[in-house]
Length: 400
Ligand SMILES: *[C@@H]1O[C@H](CO)[C@@H](O)[C@H](O)[C@H]1NC(C)=O
Ligand SMILES: *[C@@H]1O[C@H](CO)[C@@H](O)[C@H](O)[C@H]1NC(C)=O
Ligand SMILES: *[C@@H]1O[C@H](CO)[C@@H](O)[C@H](O)[C@H]1NC(C)=O
Ligand SMILES: *[C@@H]1O[C@H](CO)[C@@H](O)[C@H](O)[C@H]1NC(C)=O
Image 1 (spheres, rainbow, N blue to C red):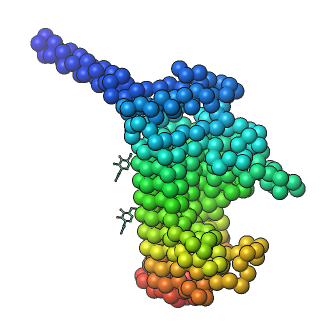
Image 2 (tube, helix red, strand yellow; image 1 turned 90 degrees about the horizontal axis):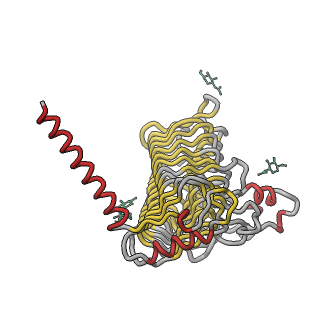
Image 3 (tube, rainbow, N blue to C red; image 1 turned 120 degrees about the vertical axis):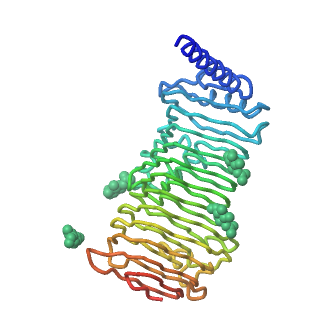
């Protein structure tokens, strides 16, 4: 008995010693740790902590060992966050338990592209925390009679020209413009993201990606006033999985064909998504303008539509206010797009709308096990310049 107990005590204290040693190794041996509060940051919601964040970043970035930046609980007023690389290590871990708060006066950051910007970084993880973009003032300005004098607004969090990035368990609230932008990046994983902004807030896209490859957006919940996720030119190997979207304008590839010379979009998978009362479900959108862009190898799979206004849309004749494109046909080539296991309800009679370009018809469109109803009745499908096949049960009946 005694011996057994002694052994137990001995083994548990050995485990404890090993654990303490491992923790020391992590914080003091193999990684440097920087707490913003130790560098003058104050989580009182008022004191400007911009300088403290800049200092911890320059320490972490110039460290030759992996580095951790820690933001404890509290509200930190951050005028702007500029986190530029390249860094001397490729393992910077930013753990946020608190909230970063943007200036509520939209003039302060309204003309800069992003409030918090990471550029030229490799191997950065941002985990946890809230980003409060304080966008309401700018939304009201854009909604007022003097809207032409408002700045366009800053993206809340932007990664550009970066690689091997992870963003997890982060909440972005009330961005002035887009919430999260990935531009010119490779190997980016975002998981457990929450985006929250009012359904009538202008241009507050949840996550926007362009000129980037090998990006994944997983297990996230997005409610906003514009696209939940928008996919711009130059996107390849994008995986979007387990998303709840609404309110918002849905998941959109485009707008494409903004420019004549434009990179294409390819190999995009969107699966296990619930759209709840959104304006669109899955959409591909291109301006009715000449362009050498394209969208191909797109898969929309296992999707539930709950009272969505336009559940399935390809619109290649996008031309808001008939400015800059009247009468022109889209040059974007759309092919190999599959819609598989999509069901639920449409808030309008036309649940499937393919409106493609007369000069570049959509080809290789496939509908498989798609069932959408409108007010408990069969909905409609409309087709213009589109070719494809239907398989399994497809309602409304396809119009190919
Ligand atoms: C992608 O980035 C993650 C996080 O930095 C890294 O663990 C992983 O090895 C990278 N994958 C590739 C293929 O480089
Ligand atoms: C903009 O104004 C309209 C009409 O006054 C109102 O219904 C809408 O909610 C406003 N939007 C925002 C974002 O304040
Ligand atoms: C398509 O993208 C996925 C990642 O989303 C990747 O694993 C796959 O290899 C890509 N396929 C091709 C043909 O490049
Ligand atoms: C659809 O039908 C169900 C069951 O028959 C009924 O409970 C529901 O109210 C109907 N909804 C509409 C919008 O007609």
